Image (cartoon, rainbow, N blue to C red; front, top):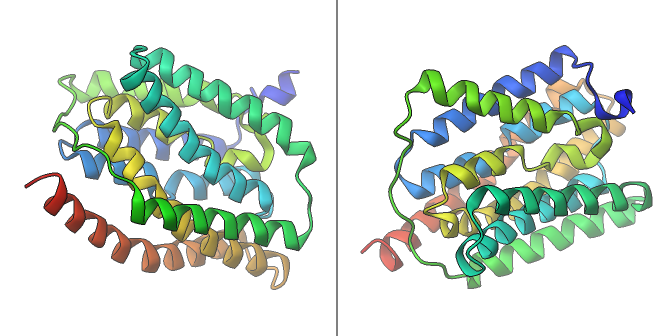
Length: 254
């Protein structure tokens, strides 16, 4: 049980904790709701989780990307519609992710067809949501806490979330560590976070496919695979983010 919960952190585990803490702390001090949302969708935590887990990219990664989008929307609906406080809403969202992930993990097929199908599903859902979804504009807000209090608090939360990393297997790469932090820091602008996540669903599958075959066919080093994945993701994500920012400026921030 101790091994399953991963109490023995490796160097890469601690590196992941550091990166998520740094990015989460940055999100806390950003006032712009969309910039906060961007910190939840750029794949820095995903990449370092990939390094920490040490497993090839597979269908679980694509499925967990979709589940991460569901997590953010569950938190938004619970907090805004059901009027549950933000922390219990986040906890309930995490319970959904963990229960669903641990149920699916041993049942996800390893075949290429299922992997590519999961990637195609992510892309299709992301594209539809990117074109159709409409949410209200969020409130500009940054934490009033000094960084010497906020950063250790975020580090403590991230470290606690890391305990279930090994339990999640391939689902860990998109485990909503960063989204949990950003959901709390964006509790006045959760719509912006949900509006941003389809960009990850559009760009992510291309990154997943490239990384999988660079590793499994060419046998490249994990860090090289990750760098190539980041480059491809950036080329797709940045133009989409410009379009979304323009839409936000026209439709929500006028």
